[in-house]
Each structure stands twice: as structure tokens, then as C-alpha cells.
Image (spheres, rainbow, N blue to C red):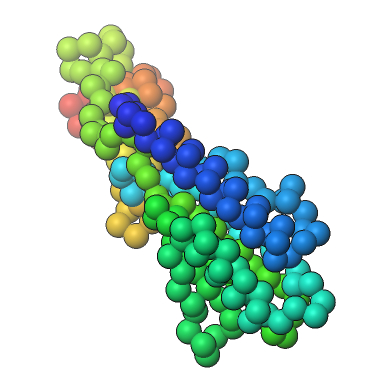
Amino acid sequence: MGEIAGARAELDRLGRSLRAQTVELVTELTPGADLDLLFLDEPTVSDRHEPVKYRYSTDFRGERPPGVEAADLVLRGAEMLSAAGWTVTASPADVVPGSIGTKDGSTIEIRATTAHPSVLFSVRTREMSLTEPRVFEWPTPVRTAETVDPGYVLCYECDGLGRCPECGGRGWLPDEEQGRITCPECLGEKVCPICRDAGQLLISRLQTFQRGYYPDLPK
Ligand SMILES: [Zn+2]
Ligand SMILES: [Zn+2]
């Protein structure tokens, strides 16, 4: 599977820059917050459609210091982001005070409420594909009419494929909404649920209903 040259390095660079900016905001706006709880060390899957995309993202909560109004805190955050080269837009005035900064496709959203000291930092880099889109190749059957062992028949479920005939051995199926869903036939196990990857079945072990798939077998 081909990695896109430089993509991971670029995403890591965005992640580090996002982390540094978030630490700066948290330290200034909600001093005393436990930065050990700022989990931004690994990118996670943000979109499971092929090609799968990744980004760094987290939500972090701090507390507004006593005596600081929510609106003032958000304003101060917006100033800091602006000074650091972020493009800042304010949340609509009718919702809780908030501002959103964007830079290089990353976003930092700061939200404070008047009713509660909680301050929410929602931060994420842009999404990136790290690998070339995968072209799925249907597997080759493990057994064919020519290679089936004496005393065996080709599996009626997979016709000798061995892999799950529904998903072709991926364990999942493409899904428009979720990107992918677990294959309902093999439940993600990837192999044919009848022959378990053998591609063939022992004639003497066939159950009565299974013999029904092979009308040419001697009774
Ligand atoms: Zn399957
Ligand atoms: Zn099978």
C-alpha cells in the first residue's frame, strides 16, 4: 500500500503546531488546567471512506478564572490567535461566547459560558490521506474444479474462494454513510463461514441439507 510521500510528516507538523498553540491558549486563559490531559499525540481516523483520512483532534476543558467574564476570555483568546496569524471569526452573538480560529486548514474553537466556569477548546488539524487509494483486488480461489482434493467438493457457499464471498476477504463492505461496515456474512472474520478458508468440503461430512447443493453426488 503506497504511502503518500511527505503526507505523514506534514500532518505531524500541523499536529505539533496545533498543540503548541493550544498549550499557549490554555496556559493563558485557563491557568492551572492539567495539560497532561491534552491528548494530541497521534492522528486518528476522521473519515473511513476510501481513501481513509486522518487528523489530530481533541476537546480540552479548562476553567475560567474567578473575576474573568466569559466574553472577555473569548476575546482575549481571539486576540492571541490573531496575533499568531490565525483567521478569527466570532460565534454568532446569540449563542454562548465563542471564537473560531483557522490556519493551514486547522481550527481552534474556544467556547466559554456565562453560567458555568467551564471553557471548551475544540482543536483539530485538517484531514489528510496518508496512503494512496487502495484498489481492491478480488482474491484468487484456493480451490477450483481442477484442484479440489479427491473425496471433496467445492464449497457451495464460496465456490472454492475460501475467503468470504460477500466481502472478498476484507471483512468489511463499503458504506456510503459510514465509509465501511463490518461484513454481515463473515462478521469481519474474512473467511467463508462454511469452509473456513478451505474452499472445499469433505463429501462424507456433508449434512443432508448440504447434499442438496450437489444434486450430481451419488446418493
Ligand atoms: Zn465477509
Ligand atoms: Zn466456502
